[in-house]
Image (cartoon, rainbow, N blue to C red):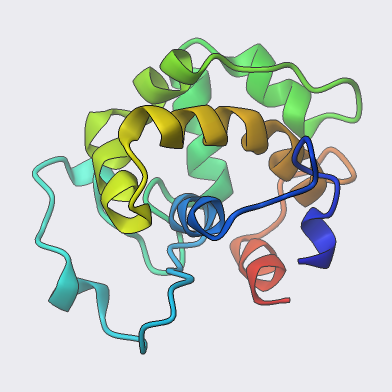
Length: 151
């Protein structure tokens, strides 16, 4: 995964974590299954914020994820990931509260991880991944984020 080398402590991004990141950031499922329309395999969620935007991830892509974190009072943390300075960490429970239970439940189902393990892995990985996706302190356009998952 070239771009994400050294983005995660220990340097190892597991397949379930890549699926979770893809679901959050670009709406892509990185499973071995043949591509099927999301509507055919996922019932409409009750929470409209949890719907998958076209190539936009569950929350509208990277920008939507950052907005969710800011709305939940974690703007300084999110800004540190985008900025060029030191990345601040986020507590797994704080991340879960910011993303919302519906989003966490859906990603957990897609990855096969339990919700707490998913949040633990995401809280560890997201600071480095977002930092790698925003090398100049700017949030890239959605197609640029998507291309990072295709390389």
